[in-house]
Image 1 (tube, rainbow over the protein chains, first blue to last red):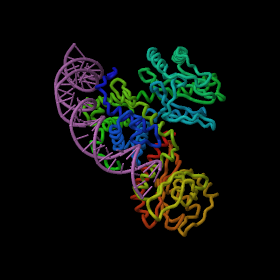
Image 2: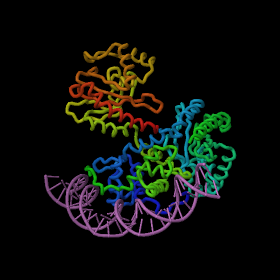
Image 3: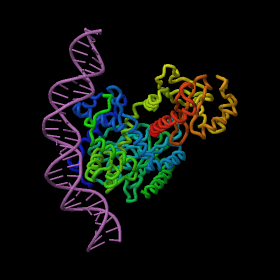
Image 4: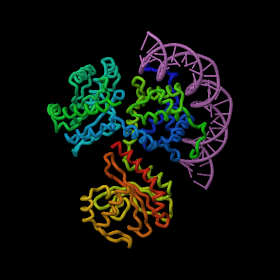
Length: 257
Length: 257
DNA sequence: AACTTATGTTCGCAATACGAACATTTTGGA
DNA sequence: TCCAAAATGTTCGTATTGCGAACATAAGTT
């Protein structure tokens, strides 16, 4: 079942319904039937059925002619994150690191060409990184992204970099695909990644992999800070050891799954 | 379109697929095909199609024979939440309670010795509580205030009560600082507060805490009503359950901060 | 290696989802 | 306020989609 499934093995109505859910999630003020139909490329009748089903299942609410996403999606995420998931168990570990070094500490997984934050603990600085659980960032120019990419084999990495949207966020952003591949190979060898103002000027972070029992890179953890606070060398000396320790503790938790 | 929709207006495959998504969200370690089929009350073939579709759409991943929810759902929540403040998103939750019980429903945070209203939904009564977002009321003699004070430690509570301006608004107002501290301790133990005509004759309200992930009391939600309409006992039996449910839903939103 | 369990695949078919057309409601402008 | 336009609701014939059963294959256990 690792192969690409045949189209006949998929349920088109479910795919369409999920598409409608995504459209609604990007419209916090709600949308009207016709707007949803257009956005989803469906007829009114088709979109109406899907919307009514989302309402009936509790994922959306109807206010007059507006369809608005309801908080059920949030509850579902909460169940997943909170229900003894690895990420709820990892959070105290991240909190300890964050309190130890005074910076924000996060965990993320790879989703397509992005990383998605699955756990985050804020640091105690006033000027601080404002990212949250659920935030997506491009993998190619983030420390956790680099670490997660280092867990792919060369063919997968080449394929992903080939298709990725790559742009220079700052003058320091590495955008050449071959140079990126070489940087990821460096990360693979070194066992950690430091990204220095490639996502945003002033933002520097260090990440390490979290591995499953089989050695696969399943997540990354990082510490993000301001480049004014830690040099790259200081990150290596001061931030890397507690980060490696946190990753090891999270890996211990993974051993039970 | 406000009527209950006919069954033929709903898409059964979407409903089933959402059911599978919910089953996966409650299984952080993942499930096998047969387990999902049983949990969803579907045949293997049916469950397999839905699972493959969730995988194809990015909501799940297949690791060997395990199907695991992916982080896409979380990033969808982030997109949705990104557009507004927590309290604007909490308003529909308060509205639902308000419509259910017919009374006004509010949320507030602690500022100094006052509570400050951050969200409010009016009830449908003609004689009704006329307070607004931004309104400040003294914490010591309001239900939300009592709940918020119950989140302080004893030293903080003593300090605040010592400095607070305390006066008898009605003959029922508790003004003795030690008696107030004891009442707050009661609230801490009980997990809710009822304030009975201490702010204003005829005004009775019940409040519960909203807690952050770390368990800190960060806000309170309440239902305010006329003492002619609900006895304290009825408040406990009729108003407390929906209020606790609303607090839990708002706490789900807080998980994303 | 043999057996059991679990999953993958195929195919006939019925039920489900579909869209078009008409009916009704809502909205906006004069 | 009235009317026309826009939006949504409803119905129904039908084609397509999703279905499950049966067989094939793979994985796990002893």
